Length: 163
Image (cartoon, rainbow, N blue to C red; front, side):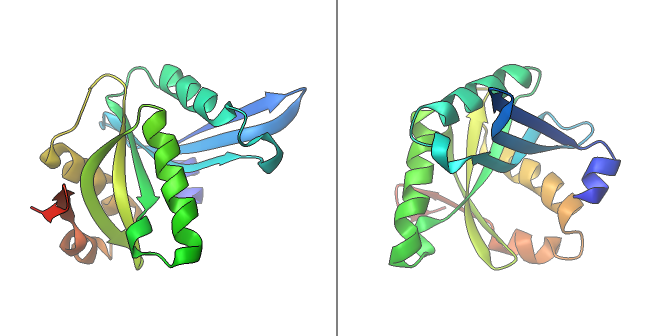
């Protein structure tokens, strides 16, 4: 994170009500890349369930209108225990209700399985190649020593079939 901040590759948006923080997002941005990656998205617990998350996403889209879109890594609920699966499924359902779409691209970093979603801004959708290249750019920056292992974990799945 320090490296990202030092190199000005983080976009931080803080949302306040009555001068108090209620939500924030931290996005990674790389030079010469038309995509950003949502690193963190948090809504304070007492403000959840009241539509604030959707408003934050809409504002984020407005702030980043010059980008093709936002990539999101969401933990794969299907590879989780029963206790955490419900929360992960709810998170994905929230994103999908808010206009985020599936890329059907999956990966694993540091032994955590992810589904990759896309929040369209300038582009309506990404091809598999664009998704892979976008994630490669971020992962090469974040995990240069592990990138070959991460690339081996890439999978494209649609309608339950691996492609």
